[in-house]
Length: 73
Image 1: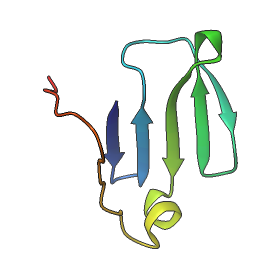
Image 2: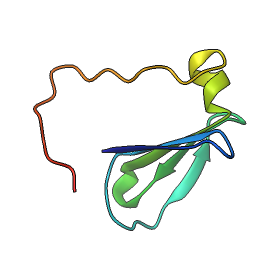
Image 3: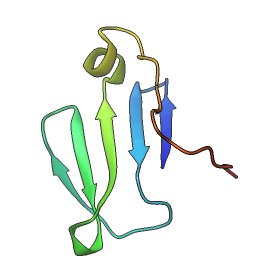
Image 4: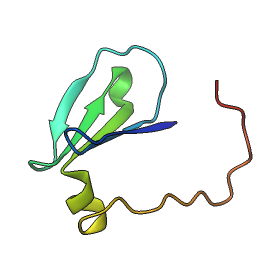
Protein backbone atom coordinates (compact mmCIF):
# COMPACT_ATOMS: atom_id res chain seq x y z
CA UNK A 1 0.00 0.00 0.00
CA UNK A 2 1.20 3.49 -0.81
CA UNK A 3 -0.27 6.82 0.34
CA UNK A 4 0.64 9.94 -1.64
CA UNK A 5 -0.39 13.56 -1.26
CA UNK A 6 -0.27 16.36 -3.83
CA UNK A 7 -0.28 19.70 -1.98
CA UNK A 8 -0.79 21.73 -5.18
CA UNK A 9 -4.29 20.30 -5.64
CA UNK A 10 -4.86 19.06 -2.04
CA UNK A 11 -5.44 15.48 -3.21
CA UNK A 12 -4.62 12.29 -1.32
CA UNK A 13 -4.37 8.92 -3.06
CA UNK A 14 -4.28 5.59 -1.26
CA UNK A 15 -2.99 2.89 -3.61
CA UNK A 16 -3.92 -0.50 -2.24
CA UNK A 17 -2.49 -2.59 -5.09
CA UNK A 18 0.75 -1.68 -6.87
CA UNK A 19 1.17 -1.79 -10.63
CA UNK A 20 -0.80 -0.69 -13.67
CA UNK A 21 -4.47 -1.66 -13.65
CA UNK A 22 -7.36 -1.00 -15.99
CA UNK A 23 -9.83 0.63 -13.60
CA UNK A 24 -13.29 2.11 -13.53
CA UNK A 25 -14.03 4.96 -11.17
CA UNK A 26 -16.94 4.99 -8.74
CA UNK A 27 -17.60 8.41 -7.19
CA UNK A 28 -18.95 8.28 -3.65
CA UNK A 29 -19.37 12.07 -3.62
CA UNK A 30 -17.61 15.12 -5.10
CA UNK A 31 -14.48 14.53 -3.01
CA UNK A 32 -14.08 10.74 -2.82
CA UNK A 33 -13.64 8.28 -5.68
CA UNK A 34 -12.86 4.57 -5.71
CA UNK A 35 -10.78 2.95 -8.45
CA UNK A 36 -12.11 -0.55 -9.10
CA UNK A 37 -9.94 -2.99 -11.03
CA UNK A 38 -10.35 -6.45 -12.52
CA UNK A 39 -12.50 -8.81 -10.50
CA UNK A 40 -14.08 -5.85 -8.70
CA UNK A 41 -10.88 -5.40 -6.69
CA UNK A 42 -10.46 -2.06 -4.93
CA UNK A 43 -7.21 -0.68 -6.36
CA UNK A 44 -7.17 2.83 -4.87
CA UNK A 45 -9.03 5.65 -3.17
CA UNK A 46 -8.75 9.29 -4.25
CA UNK A 47 -9.69 12.07 -1.83
CA UNK A 48 -9.95 15.62 -3.17
CA UNK A 49 -9.91 18.58 -0.76
CA UNK A 50 -8.10 16.15 1.53
CA UNK A 51 -7.29 18.60 4.31
CA UNK A 52 -10.94 19.52 4.74
CA UNK A 53 -12.36 16.03 4.23
CA UNK A 54 -9.92 14.26 6.55
CA UNK A 55 -8.55 16.78 8.98
CA UNK A 56 -10.71 19.85 9.37
CA UNK A 57 -8.17 22.05 7.55
CA UNK A 58 -4.94 20.09 8.02
CA UNK A 59 -3.73 16.63 7.14
CA UNK A 60 -4.21 14.23 10.04
CA UNK A 61 -1.34 12.08 11.32
CA UNK A 62 -1.13 8.52 9.98
CA UNK A 63 -0.99 5.77 12.60
CA UNK A 64 -0.23 2.16 11.66
CA UNK A 65 -1.36 -0.48 14.12
CA UNK A 66 -0.45 -4.16 14.17
CA UNK A 67 1.56 -3.85 10.95
CA UNK A 68 4.77 -5.79 10.57
CA UNK A 69 7.68 -3.64 9.47
CA UNK A 70 8.53 -3.95 5.76
CA UNK A 71 11.03 -2.33 3.44
CA UNK A 72 9.61 0.01 0.79
CA UNK A 73 11.66 0.44 -2.37
